[in-house]
Image 1 (cartoon, rainbow, N blue to C red):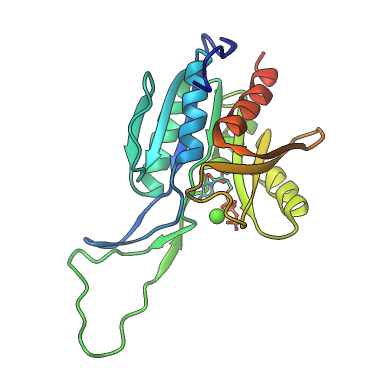
Image 2: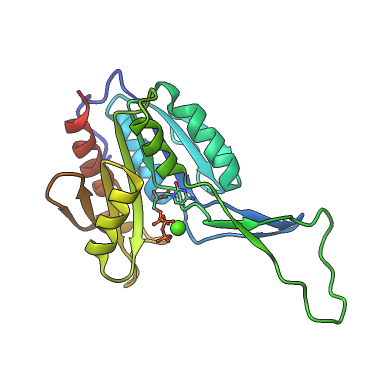
Length: 227
Ligand code: CTP
Ligand code: CA
């Protein structure tokens, strides 16, 4: 297996990975969602477990089997993901936010199924979801007990480096893995290519390859920051 011979450099560490994509209810049968498959987050969880970490995987709407030896917490919405991540990071050394979190949710989901009436449909009013990654950074800045390494993911389509650097600073994380979107990369594919932006350091290019390879490089960078 690709995980054979993995170093045990994360033994004794607790890590949290979020994966998948949140769903925001419109009514009991409909939601606002996104195209995240959870493959990259699951690869990160598997690689960390293979390297000896105690892993909590917070999975939002992922159609993948639980990785062996990983504690999986299944959630649906951004609010549920936030609560699960905040609870899981209490004793964690590192957190990786690979989940695609909906930026907005319907303000007041209908308790009953919305029906066609023949008239124009009602508008769906949205409100902002909490920014979980930014909250993790703020808690650490405020001196609260926090993971020593905080990692975000971002998919950018243009001005990748400038947008990514601004996002890294805004979120207060240590590493930001910026995916290259398009050309059959990222969503639902086994391969990925990325640039890892490093707070106070040089970017690291990860060439196109299996999501396990990207996961390995990300944990190498995290392990080097764990003291
Ligand atoms: N994220 C989060 N909570 C949110 C939105 C995003 O924790 N409400 C995390 C994601 O898990 C990811 C990182 O923030 O690790 C970047 O997500 P992204 O959508 O690229 O950032 P946004 O700040 O939402 O910016 P944009 O306007 O580009 O969507
Ligand atoms: Ca977003």
